[in-house]
Length: 296
Image (cartoon, rainbow, N blue to C red; front, top):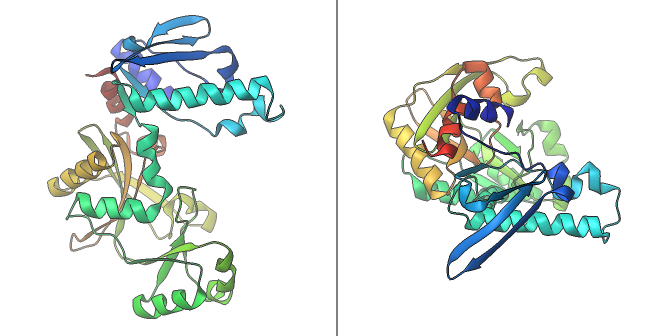
């Protein structure tokens, strides 16, 4: 948030923070009449017409986990007001004509990896998706492994999980998946490439690492080197197509590219933690997002 605000300052474009921790002293009120949306956002005592807002960068935590509210009874007036304000915000973000990065409704694709995979496949023929099994049946997993060889496993939902290789030890405890379906995929070769799409701009970062999940390479005593990568035009267009198909003007797309150029797409993050990649490569992702929000 700070990086985007700094870039908005550089553009000379005004902005305001709507801080969840201050939800009890802020207010959003709007109505839709004859197809037109009209309302006021009050932040720290300042009233802002919703028509003045050109764009919104959304990074929200679970309202129920706000420290300022968690200690209060669920049915207390403060908790009810907080829920009402968050519901109003979510509704407005989906209805607003402003540039929203990203709308809550569009974020839903990340809640089900199988659904998102189907959307990726439909959006571009240049991006393949790995053969996948989601199951809570150990025998099905064993059969899938016999067919595909080395497997990785991870969450099938939007909750972050650490990608792991299915080891002999893991196979011995497969009975545990009967309590929760797990996503298994054929492990594919190649280099990881994270692509950030901001409107029509594309920024690609290649990751050089021997870790199964480069985000946690240090945990396993391994290194991860990030470098700017020139994505072929066909893949840049494919990533733009996926971003548009998922209605995510700001997206973090995880690719793996084999030596022969064969490209696999694992998932699309609707709320990418881009600062990690910008800090390591110097790519101006925050500046691109600021320009998008400001309509430049």
